[in-house]
Length: 347
Image (tube, rainbow, N blue to C red; front, top):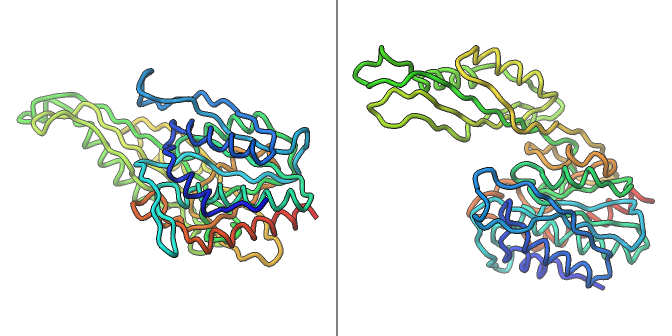
């Protein structure tokens, strides 16, 4: 059966599935794949958004795994069902589909489903794994990795512009928490500003030398983004607490970076980490065009699913933006690329 990847993308984009709220899109995919003749399994994922309390509207969330009944797949096509907020539905013109998740990663889901159908028809043992939580904590990938299915190869999907990734950067999430002593701002000598400590520490973190990997070309620099800062109560109060959340994109082992941050901060703030995804190198296959991804993926959390590869349609430059979109032409081309890659790997 020939699957219309463009129409399937439209349907997926119109289902809201921001992280921790993936139940509806998971249910849609489970039913859709069952109608295509797959044996479908829901892998429950229980982790919740720590910012919410019970009753805040979170629904059931689960990974979706599909394969031929009783078969062990040689290759599994995988990506994530969750998106970043805010949700906005699908619109289109002659060239593009627009909407949250269009390229990250619902168009990829559609391309993988269409490719898997062609691979099945060609006799390739193929599976599909769609996970939750990639945009936050890789919760779905962790659950999936505890339940591997014996596949030899994993083709993960993220927006790589239809280029096969030779490497992906790692991601290290770092929190700095500074403490001080509250006082009236007219008498700062009676207090100790946690914000001042934090600002000075952040200045030094941004100024410190970071690892470079020349083999990665223009993607070879470790980068630091200060994504969140909070602290204090009012302009006329010396703050007794402040914190910052950083995301470091790593090009090698993370321990060197963690040690460097702790040295630079030097007691001015507590340093903790809440996410540590490794930098991953992958191999070239055939004549497929290649790139190095500056972003991280679920691949480090899916080590039990076979040798990893990364390929997908769309540009990461428009993911997570109000202009998120995917080229219809590129989407259909990626169906062919997934078939070509999986066929070469399993031949």
